[in-house]
Structures are given as C-alpha cells and as structure tokens.
Length: 351
Image 1 (tube, rainbow, N blue to C red):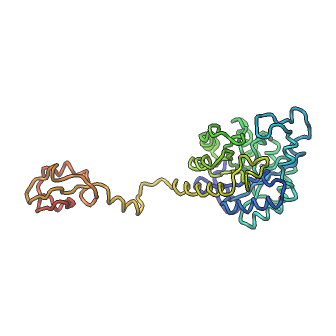
Image 2 (tube, helix red, strand yellow; image 1 turned 180 degrees about the vertical axis):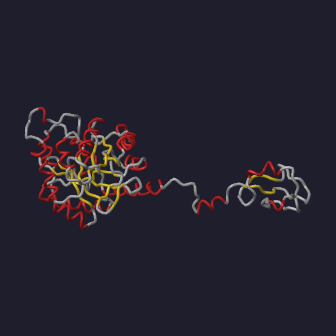
Image 3 (cartoon, rainbow, N blue to C red; image 1 turned 120 degrees about the horizontal axis):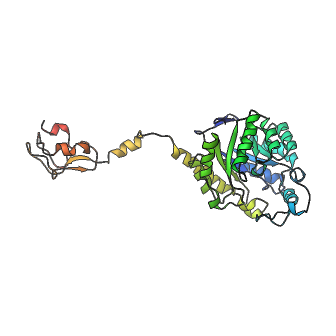
C-alpha cells in the first residue's frame, strides 16, 4: 500500500503529524445548528477533520420488527430495531453540502462514511476528498469496490473484521488500482473496555500490510489515543459531542470539547517527544553534561608527589580528565604543586 498519502495539501506518512478526526455521527441530535456548532468546536479543539455519516434508515437496513433487525447484542442500543435507531442517528443529506462548506471555511477537511452506492454518488457530487469505510461495512465488497474506483484515499476501520476480511478488502482496492488505504485499529464496542483494544494489533497491521495505520477509538478518555500515537498511529478518530448530558445515540462514548482539546494537545506533545533516532546532544544536554563526573585532585599535592586513590577521585563536575584515565594516572607523579579542587589535566602530570 501507499505509505505517503496526500490529503488536501498535506502528507500522511510515518513522519507526519497525526491526522486527528472528530466524528460527529449522531451527536447533532437532528439539529442543524448543533451540527454547525460541533464543527466549530472541533476546529477550536484542534481537529484536522470532521467526519459525517451518509445514509438514511432505508439505505442501511429495512423497517422491520423481525428478530433479525432487533438490537440484542448487549450494546447501549439494545431494545430497539436498527431502523428505529438510524431514524434518530442519520445526518440529513440536505445538510451535508452546507456542513462541508462550514468546515472548509474554517480550514477543516470534511468527509464521510458512505453506506450504500447512492451515498457514494452523493459524496462524489459534493466532491469529498476522502472516504471512510466503517467497521461494519468492511465486509461489503461491492461498496468497497465502488469507493475504490473513485481513486480517492480511503480510511478503513477494522472493528468487526477477521484477518481475512481485511485482506479481502485491501485486495479489492488493489484490484481497482487504489492503494491509498489507511487501516484503523478499532474495537466495535461502545464504549470499548481498555482490555479489548489490543494496540499491538495496530503495529502488526502496519507490518503485515505495509500501510499507514491509526486508531478509531471508542474508549473513554484520551489515554488510549495518545498511546496509539506513541506506537505509530498516524490517524486518530474520536467521537465529539457538545455535552454527553445532552444524550443521543453516541453520547455515552463521545468526548466533550475540552476533553478533545486536551487529547489533541497531548498528542502533539507526544509527537515532539518521539522525535528521531539520534545520539547527538542538544545544547541543553551539552550544558548539563558539565555536571557529569571527571577526575579531580581532592587533596593538595606537592610537585613530585604520587597520585593515589586518596588524592585523585572521580567526582562531579566534568571539567577534569575523563574517568577512563583513572587507573593509568595512579602511580604517576605531579609535575607541579596542585591545590585541592583542581580539575586534573595532562599538564599537571609528569611525563
């Protein structure tokens, strides 16, 4: 896969800043003005992009009360049907071009997850620059093929995927000549218990598929997202709401603006700390090195007197000879009188 993906004038690669996505999902609560406000606070919190979802209840499932369509998997949505859930969660399509413009005017990228062919066509009409394949759609091969044919970059979540599902989805993209795919480690539990994350899998995906990786994170807090960045994640996606107390389908596992902002700040700190592989010392380290150890005369010595373990020692600071010369100096004699507290140098030692 491509390990340097170009997005609207920026690169995503192993050396780039983490691309941080605020997922709006259902947190607009069917209120357009609230959706606009979420975009604004995502920008203020430091996000690089806002993500929408493009579906209607009828394009994603059937309006049926049969047991197949009942939500009974032990989720926060149990007790309703898929269709009823999506009636409260979908983002009206007529909003989306306007929301995209709001985001772009703020300098945010705006993209979406399509859930059927008509959504892809709609997103193409909006000229979205990027596609997201949601975890539950990673098994929808026709949808992935249609998205891959747009030749636009794809971010793909792996929350419910077996290894063969990931391989199959990537192969479909390759068949269509699209190798601009970023894989996100994800655990499709809402919220996700920390012990179910298994961030080591993200590292393995990077090695196994030779691709850029990241994390779609549904845990509470920011610790997991920050840890993922330290392990090589170049994309982080987190749900954002104005206030969890406002409710909504995704509120329970969404971040509030101040939490999202703190996460972004911590990620940027970690990126600086990761740095590069170097054994050079910074100016600060060079200055601090003056407080390391070296050889000093610790008792006053007369000319011709022998250096011993009593009058020469390795102490701080580092203005004397290196301690590597200690054994070789013992037994030699002083070339001049030497006052206690003098850093040892070759000029003070009789040749």
